[in-house]
Image 1 (tube, protein in one colour):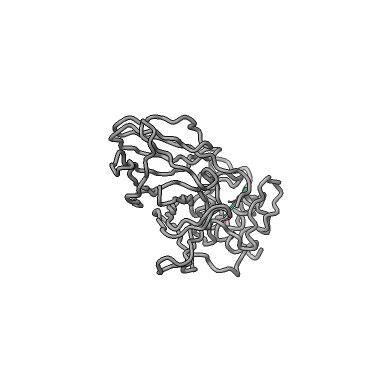
Image 2 (cartoon, helix red, strand yellow):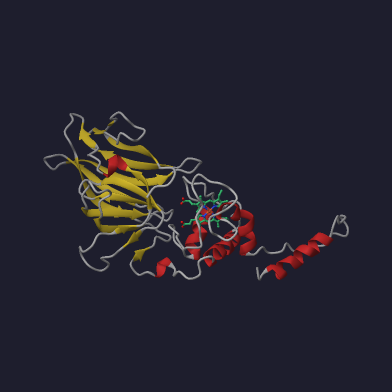
Length: 316
Ligand code: HEC
């Protein structure tokens, strides 16, 4: 409100300067929009003029209220800018990267942040791991996904800068779930063992109820065990590498796995396996995915993609 006098002035000048001819056209500088004006124009319809989430547009999934500071994708201006630019796949929150300039996005994000001035920036919390421009990997105890399942003493969570994170069970290198939003709260920071990691994102994929069985076997049907070799965070998306091992302990294949969300109206998670097979192997993907039969991967290097649908609507 207090910005109003300043911004009304250039608008009035523009208004008076009606129908200029080619010759007397003067360069009128386009008035710079404030964060509040950009907000009213592009965001208020869903998030409400006061940032309380009560916009004019009725959504099946409510837009976020910014007033109470409940940001699941991070509450720093930087985090809000990223969410505004990229949107939130699988929800009505649209991406603005092609509509607004980075400067406009920063300004509107600052305005959004100002709706909840009393809360502290989440990144100031020393125990929260925040993924910024490179993937991060956290290792540790992972809480049970639901009450029927056990806590995994050894888990790995890969967080990518696009705010998707992937929870793996280490023992057989199985993807358990995919989350979106903030990354991890590390309660046992600096210590070994201790309390489990707290995964902060909202779950968007749960593979086989969070307790998937092994995916790989030999051509003759004997189970292959997956053994973790390494993780790699040098690229845009974190990579997890593992070997497939027979009961006797021979390595029959090496796999490099990356999970990437697809872009488009309907977001899917592609679990991309680059398989270097010394012997043919059979893959039995989870029943919930698009591949239902067990394809045979021949000897050599092959890519195999398993596609997971993400939940629409509200989930925890
Ligand atoms: C078509 C409706 C719509 C419009 C327009 C819209 N949003 Fe959203 N926005 C949503 C919904 C719905 C959510 C909640 C998504 C979810 O369930 O996580 C959301 C979530 C967000 C979040 C995430 C908050 C968090 O949890 O971390 C931010 C930040 C945000 N919007 C900013 C903006 C900004 C800035 C604009 C304008 C430039 C904007 N939105 C315009 C619907 C909208």
